[in-house]
Amino acid sequence: MYTGGQRVNDADSNSFHEKESTGMATFANNIHTKSSSLSTHTSAQAEANDLGALIFEYGTSRCKLGYAGEDFPHVYESILSRRVGKDHFQVAKEAKEMESDTEGICDWLMKMGTTNLQVDWIERPLLLVERPFNTLDRSANKSISTGRGVDMKETDSRMRRPTGKVRNSGSVPIRNHLDSDHTKENIKQTRKVREDMVQVLMEQLGLPALFCSKSSVLACYANARTSGLVVEMGATYTSISTIQEGYAFRYPRTQMIEFGGFDLDAFLQSRLHSQWEAQNLCTELKHPLWTYYTQAKESSLCHVADTTFLEDENTQLPRIQYELPDKTIISLGTERFSVAEHYFKCDTDDKRPTPTPSNGMSLSDLVCEVGAFTTETDARRDLFQNIIVTGGSSCFENLTTRLEKEAVASLQKRSFSATGNTQPSTNTNSGFIGAGNNLRVKVIAAQPQERKIGSFLGGSIVGSLGSFHEMWMSKAEYAEHGPSLIHKKCP
Image 1 (tube, one colour):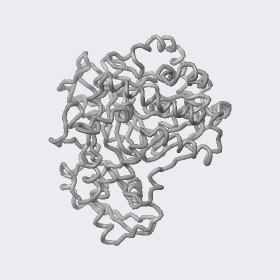
Image 2 (cartoon, rainbow, N blue to C red):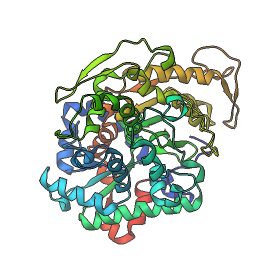
Image 3 (cartoon, rainbow, N blue to C red):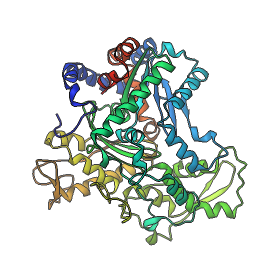
Image 4 (cartoon, helix red, strand yellow):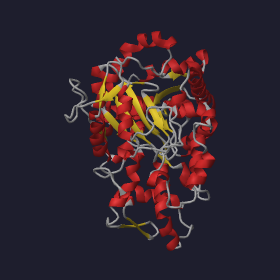
């Protein structure tokens, strides 16, 4: 087992997990079988139909809602796409704020469930996919938004008007790191946010049962694993989580930066804005203009370079033309590689607070830093051999290869002491850290389409297990113990 880390549950509930350890081990063993046979729609589908469980994941870019045992959600809805009359960054801000609006999410669920799925919620158990710890912490502790967190007014004013100039020589800044304020008080507030969500779902929807699980844990299951370093690359955040045997750990073994696909959209928009103006592109389109920037980014035109990509040294790169749905032609030159390169740049903004070890680190450095907090040798080896990449922003071609290569290079520069601290290493053997540690790196990634819904697929697997009814919090249990029971039933 891991040492030195804090599990999802508090210390006062350790006895509960000792009691449940045997069941959890059996559940973990079942994951491998279920994940490999999910797409066959055989036994998993039959069990899912018997339980009638639904899976729901809220995302700032896409919300997913569907049945357990299925390999794609019935509702894959972009909340932003319906806000035609609003500015992209204003809509993105509203989508982030809605994450803490439990009643708003419940209303959306009620609408989608009844109109798209024709379900009666009082008959349907629900598996709720929870975001990483730090997004909940952000919702629980609004004070993070001032001083050390994101000042949305400043962010909007900096990114709303494309100028072609971005700080740090074209680098989109990693805006902040939210784990450094992780205190007991913050954990209490996080628990309160979780309980509020449970209360609203159980009472307003009238659910017969509810189960909650972290997105990182479910992403592990979707890749037929119960342990690993999960790299979630979403629209508004990038998170690295330590998972062991189905348990997620808090800071410092889960860390998050507020940087994601929306930031890359903003960068690409700043580069292409002059082309849009030159062609007098009208706004009378079926979708907002920003969706076309996103399409250009995700259309396989944008790649991750094999090595560090410097725009100044690649100005002669041939431009590739891309036709928008309305037949407008745009062209991409260095932008094809500079967009995704931001994940591999180090933020050197001197004005940004530097209270945490991850400041000034690229994605690969941060992955290695999080893995370093696991002090047990065998567990650490298991983590680095199971670096799982998921999320819509991870779908750039060549990203996994580059991440693996740079993680190896980062590990070569450091060695691990018995306490998990890192020190420079003189060892040059590829794939090893320090003398005698025999630590190799392996990045695991599903096909791009599956990465976009990785957590949903993991939830679909869990919801189709025959033992799922033993895991959830039933309506009777909720009535007896209240929403706080969720912390023990769903650690």
